[in-house]
Length: 357
Length: 243
Image (cartoon, rainbow over all chains, first blue to last red):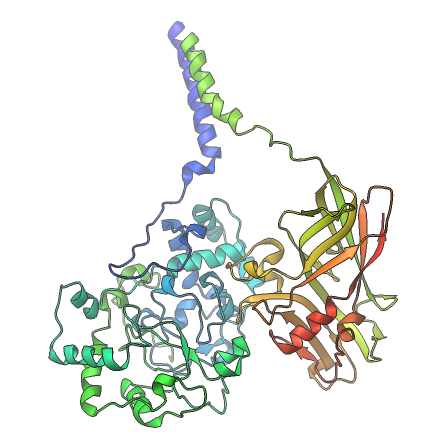
């Protein structure tokens, strides 16, 4: 008799306790993920305290990144112009394809090491990583959708409501959470395992042309393509003539300052072997085109970078060695990392989809 | 039995701990700001063709702006900054034209606010509520808020659909279009419950400079025209009445 009375009270305690735990979301916190800074790299500029990385947030971000419903007609996901095998550029395309057979006006850059980048786009017009997806989503020649419609579509999807709750604690779906989730995924895209990195870590050594190329690189290229990010994130006019159709003034479009005319962000050279075509409008289809530009074809004007005032003297020999070095910047483990692969492609052993079919 | 009661007490303790009422702040009361949109003396009616101060025949379709950083100064000159809140006042959303505030008990001498969004919110990623970029008051290609928007048509315009569109924004030094407004209240003995504020769209076209629709029908980026419009619209507010 006495024992059963005790059990009743114990049962009551257990019920109260579990009830309290279940109703209190804090006991179902998403699993935190630590952001690893590669050895010898600077501290990231992204403020992780405002958007703590979690397994649930990252996997939601990945689903959004590869979801065509973020576009007006369902055909264009972030991943359709940012392809893993091209280090998340649009592989082999000067400009990307957008809604209703349109073309973009600039070359889609590779996406990696974004935690170290303060400003986005070739002109640096976007000042926060979380905001970046809103530009392609709303651009008429890209995904051509409104933010409002995207949020409505996501809210109507039971699966998304579940995933947002798992990542953020409740089912609220808004622009801020959309941006944060996509950021959590793209922040994972860290490329730090090229041959160059392994050499720096003492795990591999350059062959002779690579070594010679690295020495030439340090004399002639490194002041803008600064290690270890291979860009100093500055905006420079490297003597690309104004395209008469695109008429792209570059950084000046953002600052309204004539001194910024024709300046574009210095791109990182990591994975440069797979991120062709090069240049803000993809006008250079090979590294050779780029070298020829720097040594012969540059249009030097008042805003051309002072480091290039007399173009860049490069011999055929130097170009050969530089090419060998630049190929050491390819991070093949990054290009094949299954964590970043489109959903349902498993270990990414399938051939890349041909978007011209 | 005693132990069990004790256990039960321990188990239930957290429940009460999280249900304690929030501590009372300093005595508070309500204040309502009511915005009246006008074109000169006329009440604004969207879609109605009217003449603006420069004699241009126009019809207004959209008129909205951000109000933030509200502060009150009492009759002795002491300023109280209200907690950070952002409001999007929209002619087409009548409810948005009344803003309800909780304020400390005070005799209000003047009210100050920012027309627009301060620069910190322009550089801190995606915001929520009135500042959600979904509201269409944010430039995605050149990060930053549109502080105020005025759109409509004018028959004489040679633009598609005879439209003029003024999206005024920009927060960087030299291009900052947020404007601080300070309005003094007429003296009163009673406690002010409502401040009615007039926003006169005529001021957009003629104040420190003249904006002729035919010459500049479009403003869609930070810069010189946006700055001129901002200098003009900072004079559009006046006290309509107090209650």
